[in-house]
Image 1: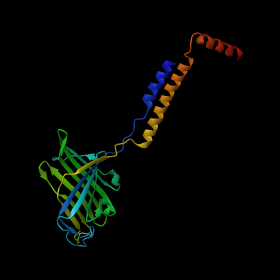
Image 2: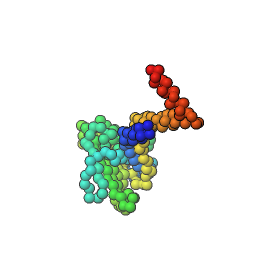
Image 3: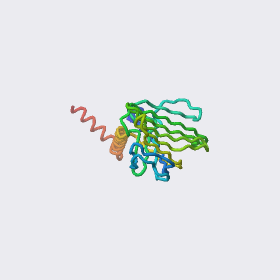
Image 4: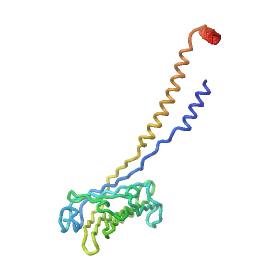
Length: 239
């Protein structure tokens, strides 16, 4: 029986599902101000007028490192690019900008496709260069883009732009770079995997407990073994 129990434990361990890990999303949130901008598409409540310099703004870039195809960029050790795609969940980068209480994302218009890219260089565990870009292109020539890049001490501006048609000035905003707040989400195992793993663990615990109870029940005082052997022989002869 002991070898059967060990074999069962080994089999359970070998066949137990490994919890699937959800996509890891890294959000970089920049709380900043507008350097210059124009509300040509009435996105931010200024009605085809300049956006006042110094207006508070928040820009966010969400990076999904499990998406994208590795590529080459001489400025970055890691370079991922995705798209064109009609499914934003397949993008490496998603973004938003909030000015004057109004938020704009790449989903501002119905696009003909999204593209995105992400670059990163790490030295001794610290990121020393990054690049975020996401762009949507609509069938009627509307383009919405978000980008930000820094390489060492060379820090660019956070940029947003939207052009509705080729003959009309759209909205744009250039934001001052700041130190972001970084949030990591989506690293917990999926619920279905947790259920399967929990069920297997409970089953294993049940096997061990049942074995322990039977062992205690039959481990009695002197003469008990002879009694149960005699009882077993009587039952065998009876049937």
